[in-house]
Image 1: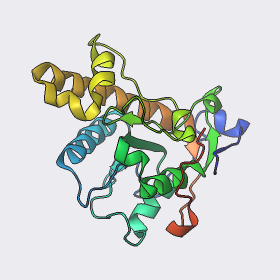
Image 2: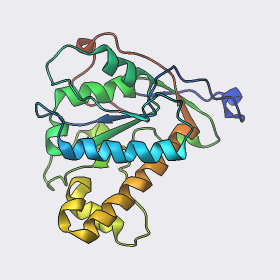
Image 3: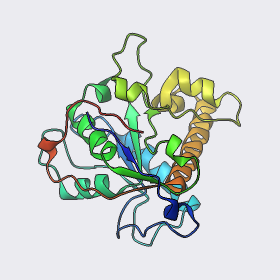
Length: 226
């Protein structure tokens, strides 16, 4: 299994020491389980999240705040655009569900990010992670969650509203808009909190670029991320 290599570099802790990202590099990569097409709810979630990131960060003109694979179906050739995004994004956001945890393709995406070197930019950042798993669909209590995934802290939205965290745990991000008007408001609040956490992670750590050259070289088991 692969593991993030955390390098503490004093020079990169000072203000202004952040390297310049590559042109067109996304801030975050949205990893999701494919079912032969891009599900409308995943696409809507990505769009809303990207809009929030664009408001919170200075995203260069012409760049997308977040990458989502709109064409690739598991089993196809590793696309150059997807490889570039995995190798240059600063935050990895997997949408956890039963199909996701069983997907070899999703494990490869996870590992492509997990193998990259992490350089903390602020004191204490080495104790966190730039992998932010979102509960997309609530997992059964007997679901087999890979150890590497279970050891990463899940995204849990904080209030207000005060019941956003409990509703998210009960319904998952996918289910929140489906429980009526209150749920849609809770969904909006949860996506906003996620955007804030993504921006914080991007400011606290620099993930060294490392573009995977070959899909087959990546493990199909979820590896360690720190």
